[in-house]
Image 1 (spheres, rainbow, N blue to C red):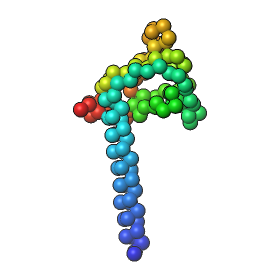
Image 2 (tube, rainbow, N blue to C red):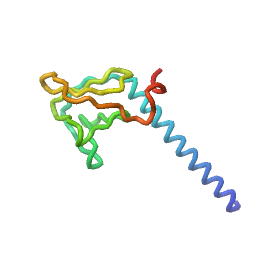
Image 3 (cartoon, rainbow, N blue to C red):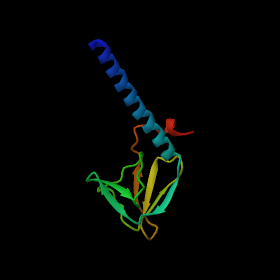
Image 4 (cartoon, rainbow, N blue to C red):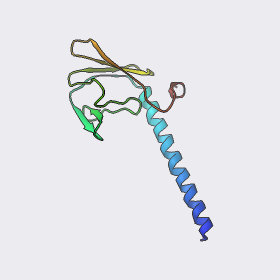
Length: 112
């Protein structure tokens, strides 16, 4: 196999990998955007030194939680399907924070 052919194969493989990751990201963002969430935070784990994962499993490709957010154990998280904002309520049902969607994909292409 010639050197030129190897470079071409490497470029094609790189393109396919990047395209696959982009498509996967779009699919996960769309599925998350179309879901509604209503749950109480029981546990907050810090991952990557600044991001949060809630209740051992919940993280979102469309919303960022972290040390800058006001989320505490006992707070309620609420998001309606196809909404651009996620709401955080304290234990007294008072609105504590509103987190805007941070996905790279616009809402118009994430809807059904």
